[in-house]
Amino acid sequence: MSAPAEHLGSTRLLDVGGMEPPEPMVRILEAIDTLGPDERLRVLIDRDPIPLYRVLQRYGYQHRTTPQADQRYEVLIWLVPDAGAA
Image (cartoon, rainbow, N blue to C red; front, side):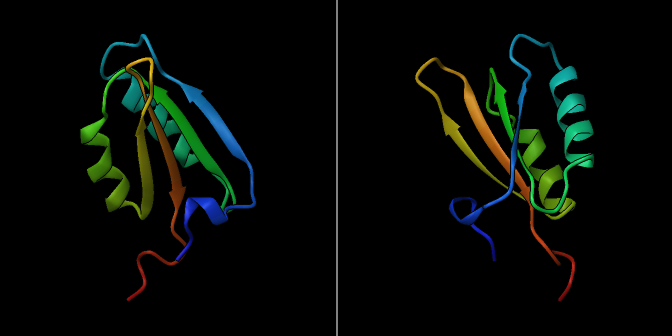
C-alpha cells in the first residue's frame, strides 16, 4: 500500500477555486482520468469536496484532504495499484 509520503513520481496541480459546481468535479474527474501510475493530483478547492470521495473510492483512488489557512482545501489524489484485486 502506497502512502503519499512515499511517492517518488510527479504531482500535478489543479486549482478549481472560484468555480461553481459542478465544474470543479468535472475538472477533477477529467484530470484523474489522465493520471499515470506514478502521478498524483494536487487539487486546490474552495470547499471540502465530500461527493468526490465516494467517486474516488469507487474507482480505486485514495485521497488526503488538508484544510488550508486561507479557508481552502488541498486534496491529494493517487491511484492505488491493484485496488480492485482481492
